Amino acid sequence: MGRAVRAPVPDIAAPPFPVGLTWVNVAMLRMDKQIGRPVLVEFFDVCRVNSLRTLPYVRAWHERYAGHGLRVISVHAPGFEASRDPDVVRDAVARLGIEHAVVLDPDLEIWRLYGNEGWPARYLFDQRGMLFEVHFGEGGYADTERAIGELLGLDVDPLPPVRPEDDPDALVVAPTPDQPGPYSGPYAAGGVWAVLSGRGEVVANGRAIAVDHAGAYPLVEHDRHTEGVLELEVGDGVTCEAVCFTPGVSAG
Image (cartoon, rainbow, N blue to C red):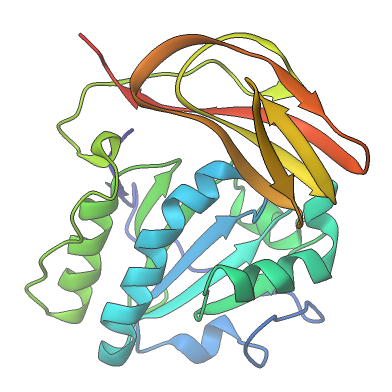
């Protein structure tokens, strides 16, 4: 799952947020006004399962350290058609209990300023506005939390792993690559999810799943990395943009 790493050079300044972007749950923030406090910037997508899997940690860091000065900002960069709708994002922010700042980046302006390459990705800046630590993808959660504590001068006890595969010592197996559209067929993964929108239901391996909002829905979940076959039926009124596979701990 990877570890968070310190900035490769000591003086990479935080890019400013472009003017005119929509902030979902706070007034507009300016990066230059954050000098004096550490800032965690995270790129996410409410329709991406790996963003949802990272969310418990990001929420916890806001809850634990905002009172000590940490600013957490999630940049919503849509990677699916459904997640381009601002109302979808607003509804998800409320439904998922996201209380830290969220800014919409529909045209990937912030994404390009950062040279970002995927979801999720997080950038931790120090009190000078200089990059302190960076991590791409899932994992590295304890490393990031310890870095937050270091910047705040706190002796932190990192959040325990939410899932077995989040443990930095776990032997995690890479899953089948994500597949576009309503994929059915063989896979090897810890879990199977689908990016769905509309209203209706889908049937995954005989199990009916109600769809009432745009987002990532779990179809099949395993205790460990498992080989299986997905049979997915998408009902009327529902669109499936992709089927996504999550990593699992090795069964060996």
